[in-house]
Length: 262
Image (cartoon, rainbow, N blue to C red; front, side):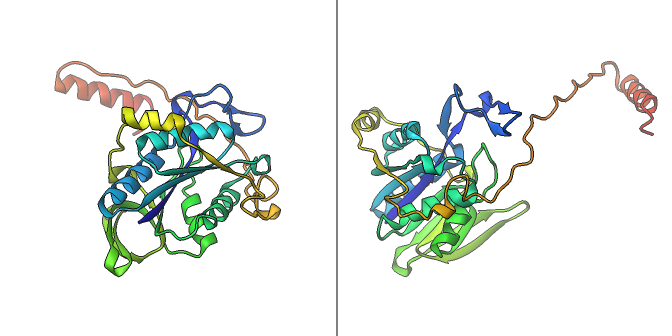
């Protein structure tokens, strides 16, 4: 199987700060990581390759420093890595990002499956995976918690994680699938993998290389308008009531009446 995994470099959520003037995340000086859901997608791609053979190609769009996430992908076991980087991509929303990734994937030739994390932890839109499918005209299945490939029938059987139940569906290949964290536990890079990652060649493609339409990339090609991004106000601390059960009940009722809840 030829599997393509799309990943994103995101700021570590423990260090997230917001620029109140531009309504954007402050990325300068903030540690970056591979989007956790994308790590699950990569792990699933590696497991499918180990079972069915083939190659795993990882692609990311971003500034030159996003290449570090690709080296991590190589350390985990990816065969090939591609960085799509160009100043023209700056300010891309999910529409422009999915278009850019789709244009890149068109340059790869034949493939069987595209895997993405269900969403990125910095935007939480869950739109890029489905957007790639739409740009490429491929079937899509989201929130996969289990993927089974049926090579002889050129299809996949997928179990989807929904709010109250799991749904089982089938889908012809090639297809786009987004995965949830429950699908697997990503492996740690091996020493051999880390040594290989240091020497790995990162192929870099520009807007011209992927023949991108300027109307669909970057800020000018992004129809999304962010009105405001803000940090939620901290919640007040809770109060612990102590004493015998009867005493606690009386105290609780007293506080409820005091606040005129009842």
